[in-house]
Length: 351
Image (cartoon, rainbow, N blue to C red; front, side, top):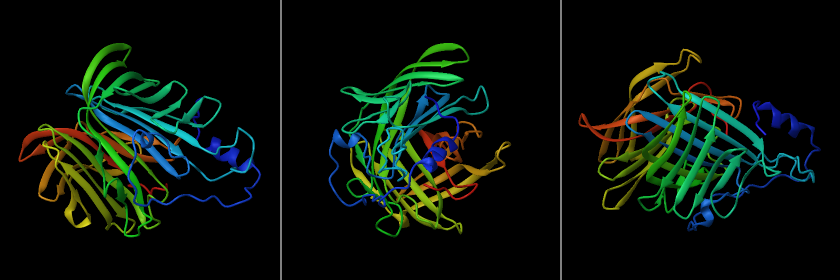
């Protein structure tokens, strides 16, 4: 069942009897990630997401994100209606021919077969929105109000572990961390329905899977993130956590070259340099939509496919953010394509 209001589950939670014991969330500690088990859900942790961004052809971007959240309420309540696990999802298409982002969102409590996130391998869904992993890759199906797609994502490269063997620090305190891996250079094929027309599409995508308990500290405002599929076969991920006072609280990233050699970078190695800003005519939020990203010895310029790629997720995640398809340039020449995410530019993001 579709959930249009972010307050729906909150109201339900408030009606539940108070929990008897405090909820304990596990900490992110060093361990070897295990596959396929770690492709699946980790329901004891507070927050988790499966996040696919990519390009369809040369002129469209798309996003599919499924979130799982353990709010820590009503866990001692035997009712199957208790919101012990929440699932919400965002989907979007960036189409310059339309000039603005097309997007939709859903939220539901897990249960009754209507929404859930399976342990052991990737399978997460809300009604007919679904992301599942099979032997040959992933399949994502979205039926939104203004668009629909049925896409397959075929791995062409090994898993890229982020941070130290899959443990990615998000701040100076060790508890500020996530388990995190990526699947760069996914080959995309399938169907897109837009403006009443159905077409066969191909492209390239990037998948992130992250789960954590203390992702953002109270001092943090939000983050800037980018994942880039480079034309020579290399892959780059970089992020910075911005503090509420405007300083950089933490940064991290990784670069894997075309030969498979991986380099990991920390706070002193990464810089996001805004080149141009855009102000949303709807929210009045200003975003740095063009960036120069410095990651160790690597420098790339990111230019948006279009400026207006703002996603209003206040009826699901409770926030507004910018999520955009990016052209990648190096020394003025095309070097690849990817995505950039900008959060916490209106008010501090709460996880």
